[in-house]
Image 1 (cartoon, rainbow, N blue to C red):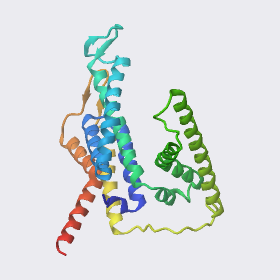
Image 2 (cartoon, one colour; image 1 turned 60 degrees about the vertical axis):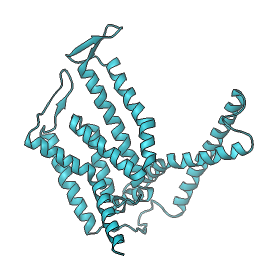
Image 3 (spheres, rainbow, N blue to C red; image 1 turned 180 degrees about the vertical axis):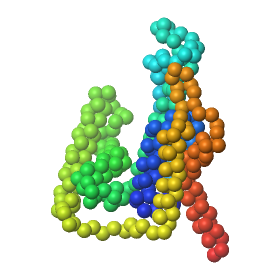
Image 4 (cartoon, rainbow, N blue to C red; image 1 turned 90 degrees about the vertical axis):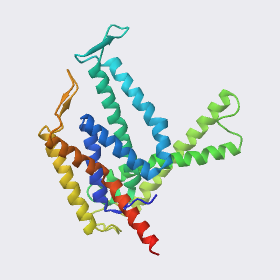
Length: 296
């Protein structure tokens, strides 16, 4: 799937994800949680299609259920007692609601980071922070791309080991453990060698030296300026509303929050527009592309 938002300037991409991830972590109002979760899932499905759906059902949904269940088992705060656990501790409606909210917040942040790893490639990150914090930006760039490269290399190693009779799914338990340790040893060696080669390569090219110039394909144009103004306007308004208590919500000792007012409604709409902006951009660009194709 072609993503139009990824073609924007790295500053726009990074600012967007910084806003939505931080807001997802700190905004605990149920409406904000629902908006952020919906937009994160929608964008991840647009970017990755069936893989995102399978990932959400296989990993995110069990994580959501597990986190929502564990919190009431250990958190007994709240004034609305529903029943008592076998241990004698109360089970409160507030602890259940907070556990569900914390679970939604957790999977939402993971979903946003999954989208971030797809859009913010290593070259974009190095472009933004290479001159300010060269060493740290290189380390973070290597760390962000390590997991997908590690998984891809592990598949190659497992297939190679299977061809020489060292399969992880066949043989006795001891043999499978030995084969697994062999693969782990290979992957650790590959990771260390790859990190050393990358560091030596960047050092030989003068990375981080004062006065070093770098070629970049990124240009900040009028489209990026419009996107920047939109992000600053919507993000600034939502942050202003949060600081003034427009989306305040508490779970303990009782659940209470700001009622639906014109001000809070405007904050929810701006928050939805902010979180959903990449999907809107992508759908708009897809529609334009289909329109141009139909005229050919």
